Length: 328
Image (cartoon, rainbow, N blue to C red; front, top):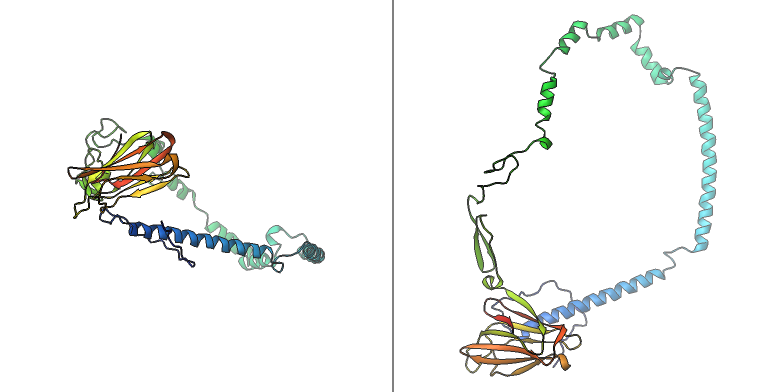
């Protein structure tokens, strides 16, 4: 058995061929997929090593990092500069506050700036003009009384109570067909126009009146089943045989994976088996035996073991539309 080669300069790829029921179950198909997995894994491992190397180089970069002595020296310099600037700032602000206080000299707050004094002089050129302006903007008693009794722009206590009772949090609506406010709908149970939901090869009509079910077999998907390893025959896989010349292998795809720790192995079906026989999957005492038999155009692959292991599982991946996998 040869190993799958890994490139010395791997390239990472996120594209992978999807398996379909028409994909040939051949080693070349799966080797290509496994090769992509291995090359992606090697690529990532090289990337991690490079990152680790860059990190180590950064830690050793004494140009980009400062020493403890440098930090103490620079901090002392900053502290001295800050102390000097704080002293100069206090002297300057003290002098400025003193001169501003002398300029204001007890003036009221509304006239303690040059701008306020200039505006007051301009706006009140004469006392009479200022008084006339203030009196002219005052509403009359008649205008106030008219506003107070205006029922169009004001609401009444009854109107306020009525509108508050219609708030979102204090009332409910009846659903279609319900017998009480907030009750469940009794008649609106169907869509006006049914819709068709399609997944894979299976389509179901949905109108909301009942649940719909999709299954792997009808959709033409791959199914996955897991079987516990037991002494004797514990699982069987059945499908039609391929009838091309002297070949009598399974016509449809299935794959068996023995995941026993340290003893793992796998088997991939092929149409080109020339005869029935036994195949060992895995190693040592937890190896699984695959026995095949052919009858009436169908091939049956039976899985068996010499021991029962509650911790060992066998996984079968198969074409759900054409292959049956059952527990024995």
